[in-house]
Image (cartoon, rainbow, N blue to C red):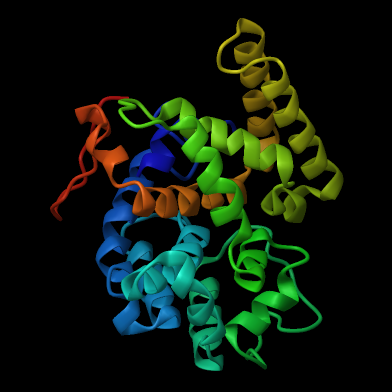
Length: 287
């Protein structure tokens, strides 16, 4: 919910929508998956992913959170056992072929954009190995798969430290911290959703444009803010095909891990940014 409410360039947020998605669709999706992911350790990673995607399809008109669910499920399973870094690798190493079967089912149900086909481990076929092995096959072309393959280095070694640098204790509005993380991750790693939809050259251009935004002093300078506005408009052109959706998913997983490590950051937020603690109708805070 924090991720979707921050005005990240190219993504859905309270000030920008896609033709088929509004920011509240992501809020409803968050409420749908939270109780499922909270029991990932009991359900198993594959079952939790399948169940979360199934629940999302009941409240959202199209795919809002497949990447988020894929990333958060193993993190949720690991943190249920104890310290996240200590327990994540055993969770990933223990993923089974049945987990892969269930995740393939979830991906087919979510109908993500730009998926294409693969010569080995194609999503339309039965997975020939464990979920981690299938992710290893796709790691060179998909950042979420690479997280599974390599132990979540973007989330834990890039996202968490970068958020820590931008989100000090006592911060009441995390907007710039979240957008700044989005820009930094995109500047460093070309978005693989853009690459699948538009090609690697366009994904590389998006990364270069993110670097220009940061180089011009965003968010502290007018030049940086203007560059960010131009970047946002470029990403949204051509029917939102340049949407950096994989980067947004990595922002969500980084927020999840960061807030597990620093729960005090939530307590300090302005009330309009606080997350609900009870289930029910999603809140409709001001933009």
